[in-house]
Image 1 (cartoon, rainbow, N blue to C red):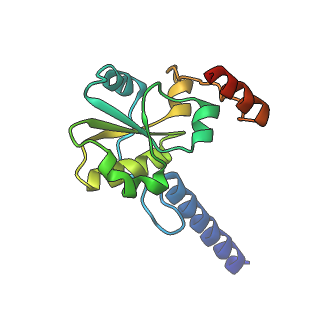
Image 2 (cartoon, rainbow, N blue to C red):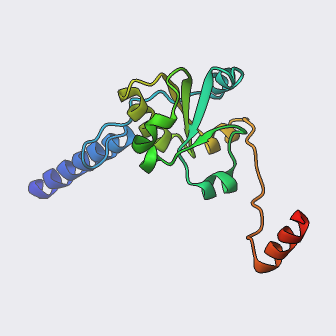
Length: 157
């Protein structure tokens, strides 16, 4: 009976340790959470008020931007393509990376910082909106069908 109780207590300690590691941002591989600063709404709004100094890089897919919404002006480079597009990013701007909940944005911020860019931090669209921020929502145009193509061609004439 004592062995069973000891085994149960040991199991509970192990499970709580795993849960605490997950809560601290460590995954099953022991990878620590991102070190990138996640911007508050106030910090993001202050940066966005300086459009000549700041560049927002949205690392989401286009369908996420159109469905969830985004900021009115940004450079769209998906996270998977970011390292191959560094030449497109000006070094003289303060960068803000943007995703849905700042997860991918944090990874992008770390990458950009490691490459010598001036990154203010990461932000999430859904997090920003939920905390009172305003996102731009742009309707997706209808697909270009043969009928629409004919109308477009006649409109050019």
